[in-house]
Length: 173
Image (cartoon, rainbow, N blue to C red; front, side, top):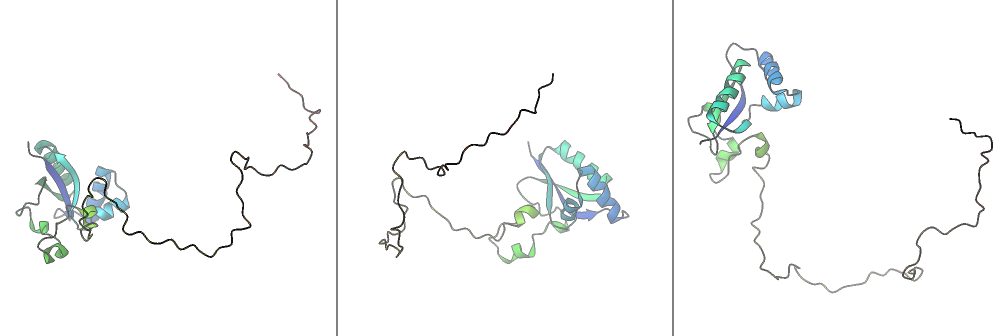
């Protein structure tokens, strides 16, 4: 069974005031101003994914009743005929082998260059090189170690313990 995702790019229906659509979507998704700013940024935002056709249509209808336009796309790719705003970002067009991010969150990771690390064979030495140890010129002669099992707490003071006078206190039921 094919799965679908709901994509929103900040577009509103003709004849609907932008603030009105923003307010209605905020109520629909229980979103605050910061989340609404992200939704209406114009970037491709995946609102919900992994839906069957009926559920995806319900989401689309609810968003359209709020005055906005969303797309229902099959999961796993961007259809070429989804609309004029489904074209990849300019940065993604510059390099043919770059992956187009699916939403605004993943767009933050589109320019990350990670080396292709392999896995070392079992028992391999992972240390780069061993260097000769050069001791630092520190004078540690004034320091000593406590014998094993010694109490490392504060040194006990020879002050008498003061017991407060509680004769004036009484217990009442």
